[in-house]
Amino acid sequence: MRAMGLTTKIVEFSDVGKHFRRRGRRLDALRDLSFTVASGEAVALIGPNGAGKSTALRIAAGLLKPSLGRAVVCGFNVSHGTPRARRRIGVSLGAERSFYVRLTTRMNLAFFGRLAGLRGRGLSSAIDHVAEELRLEPWLNVRAGRLSRGTGSRLAVARAFLGEPQLLLLDEPFASLDVLGCALVCSAIDRRLRDGCALVMATHRMGESRFCEQVVELQPPVSDPVPSPGVSLQSRSVRPQTGCE
Image (cartoon, rainbow, N blue to C red; front, side, top):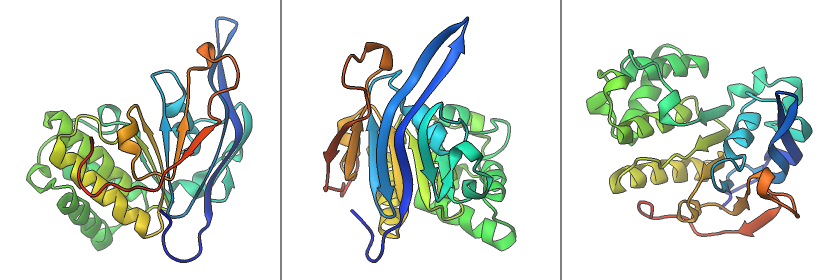
C-alpha cells in the first residue's frame, strides 16, 4: 500500500543480471530481473536458495555492481557507485553476518547509526526508539555474540531502521522469529511503509509477503529454461495485522 500523497520511484531494476567467473566458467547468479518500487510500496523477492534474491539485494545496496542491465536506487545508478545513496538505505543481510559479536547490542547499533549519519542525541534517541519498538532494551548491554537467534534477527532489523531510510533492504527479516517477534517486525515495517519508506524483502515463504504489492518469483538461473527468472509479478494488497505465518 502506498503512503498518502505523491510517490517517488525509489528502485528501478531493468533486465538486471549478475554473473561471476570461476575457473574460466561463467556462473550466473541473477538474470533479467525487472521491477520498480515507489515510496510507500513493498516488493517481495521469493524463491529457493540460489535464485538470486540476496544478489539482487546486494546490487540494490551498492555492494555489487550488475553485470548486465540497469539498476537505479534513490536516483543513483548503482553501476556508477552509490556513496551518496547509501545513507538513504537501511540494510539487513541477515543476523549471522551483521554484527561485531564482541560488542554489545547498544555498541553495534551506535556503530551502524554513525554510518547512517547519526550523531549525539539524535543517535541515542534513535537507538532507544528502535530498542523499544523491537523490545531489545533488556539486551542493550549484552554482547551480540550471546544473543539468541531470534533476538539477533530483531537486532538485524533494528540496524536497518536507523537513520530513517528512504529504502529498506531486508534479507529474510523473519528468520528465527517467534510469533511475538514476527508481530513486532511486521508492525515496525508497516509503520515505515505508511510514512513513505520503500521496501524490498527477500524470503522463502509466500505468507511473509502479505504486506507487499508485488511478488517477484525467482528461480535459480541454471535450472530455468524459458522464460528467464524475475518476470513473474503478482499484485498484492493485503497487509498483516498481527504476526506472520
